[in-house]
Length: 432
Image 1 (spheres, rainbow, N blue to C red):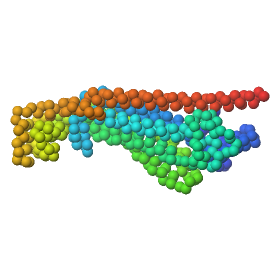
Image 2 (cartoon, helix red, strand yellow):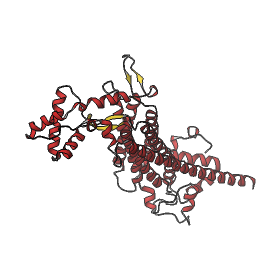
Image 3 (cartoon, one colour):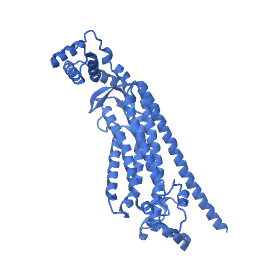
Image 4 (cartoon, rainbow, N blue to C red):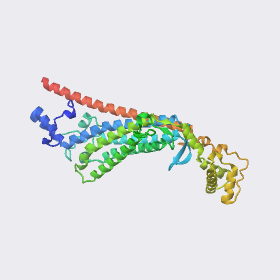
């Protein structure tokens, strides 16, 4: 523990690092080093080491994911009345707010974090005392090793303890899911940061200027997030490929020793990067409103108004409003410019009927802000509803952070206690 890994005397002449470690111990304490092999194959030490490393990294990743979810919720809370034309397939869909849009990413990040907690529960169990495959007669209780190393328990079946990899697949899968969610947000923000949209600006610390073109300001961090997501998907696929082997083979676990820690570390740094992007994001509310006001995203509500007021089925109402929108668009008009007369003309053209809407005021029906205010159903875009979802996400994220900190403290306390006990034994030997 006192020797930095780079300074440890690894020598390939003795084979893999495990052999170099044994040679080093033998040089220090002679044949007493042979006691380390009693009832313990080399794979037990390496399996335990992998879990000790990955559990700490997973705690960091869970905390990073929770902090990202909280950052998303915080920014969303500032924009519950920042009006936005929500989009599907890069086309205006319905009036909404930037807060409602952004909150839609907090929930999957929180779910990913909770799935990572389940992965941590799997990782934080001890394979100690499993022997090669059938256990060891030299131990009375496998809990002793688990407790000393700060594990929550031990893996019951000894053969399973030595060779299982399904939990490692889950670690990679859940980390990949977390980065895939971030990738979706990054791709949206890259589009929205363009001159064509100008909805958001990525902060200077997460952008870079073009060396050649003075007018270009590239949101470079978003490319890193997207690339990291693809890299992690590749690592998940690769690990699944090497895991496709007969049981009791080292192929998959040999790769796991490198792939799993690197993948989790990539997920941690990427998640922290995304958090920085979100926290410092500038939102162009005026541009969003101008885009919303210029389009026809209120068409759905108008069709529902025609359906309810005129007693028509929705498909007929849909067609009438669609014709009115098409004709208005050709004339350079906007959704808020639609009138009862235009709907009447469309109804005559489509079905040869009169809607009987004379004297009806369409101002509220066509006002995007009023439309959003009507979305008071649970999960809807109404500002008060979004504000409550923001609070829920903040609370869930903060609890995850507290839980992660408690897990980290428990791991660190176990390590400190073990090293203290070892030091006391050494001191006792040297004075006896």
